[in-house]
Length: 112
Length: 113
Image (cartoon, rainbow over all chains, first blue to last red; front, side, top):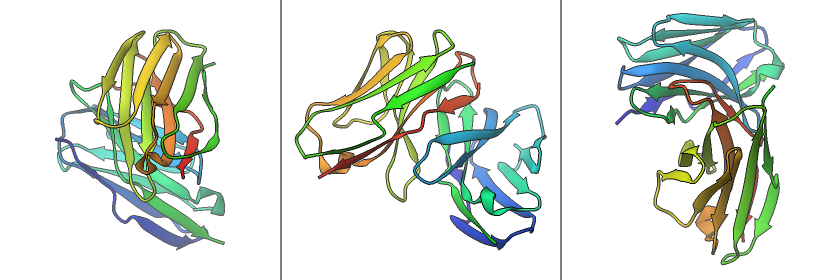
């Protein structure tokens, strides 16, 4: 059974710093891995999707990497801003499965 | 473009009362549809998913049921709510291609009192 872990559960950093969020998974037989953002009381917004054959994806200040051999993905946020404060979740599709498996998320707070 | 609508956004229901949450998707056809629940301090739990009209797969045995009466309509129901049904319910859709991006609605807050 696929298990997806995100550590730490919460993270606070000063504005302007670069930061890395971590996502670990136990089964490397995946289609892709996605990173989502969730603002309090809101739905999830897709940030980046990395296909199984890719190693990274970039969108603006965000860069997501994927290392299937080690069962890890990272989300790098450059020059953090208070508006980046949210919960970030990773999720992945496993082969033969129409369903995403989500991590429990990291709650990020950017301190002005 | 595709959009997903989910309602109501918030509701407070007494224990033992019925529930109906509705979700519709526009701008696409034959989507996969999903209901997730997010309880306080816990991750997203998949409740139901559907690959077509009348086709519902249940992930977790519980007090809830789902129906898909039309291609782009997904309904989450309960005949008698329990306190443990409280949580944040999210509808989502994806194209029927394995590993495609999933898109979420804005969610419905349910408080059972």
